Length: 113
Length: 117
Image (cartoon, rainbow over all chains, first blue to last red; front, side):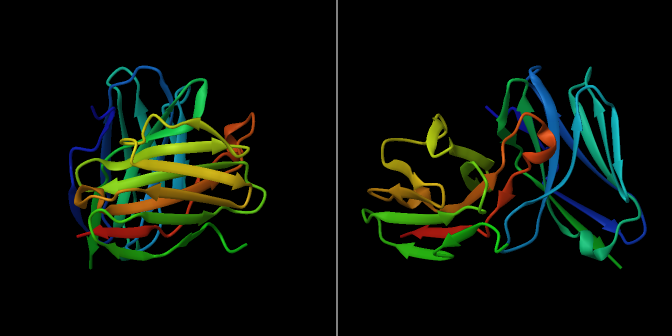
């Protein structure tokens, strides 16, 4: 059973606008969340993370929001750029088991001019 | 640093054959992870090692899969015998696990695309 779910397999956004990628989780023991970005023929690369003690973390154009009560997190990219076109994976780990990341199925983002 | 190195990048084999995937982690990293990526299940953790010792292999699909890490700079994932449903992209990742999460980002290799006919 998928503990981390990304229900939108794809998203298309115009350059300059906001991209919002969503992620839901079922395991209440998760306390650390990450987003990874993957280009074709490359491995995923770490993008941004958030601890469960926070509800927002910002890094340049990228902001991750965490809603623990809803078991939901989202990644906002503002403004979106064509170079952001990639597959984005949401991942989570449990308190006391930080080594083990549980990934979602990914969302393919396409930013068009 | 060259990053995580995986070989081969592509592997095409016939059902029933043995397949061995190889990984060289980033020098100095103490943990190594094997993942499989499929459309249906995304990135699944198969097994991970810490200081060359297998810690969690609960993601290994079945006995046909085995992984070893004979030293800190090399790991293999073996499938014997291979089946068409094993076709996927297999990633290796490494990290430096510490008491603080700020240093335990996982760095992924480019992956091995396996096709079993």
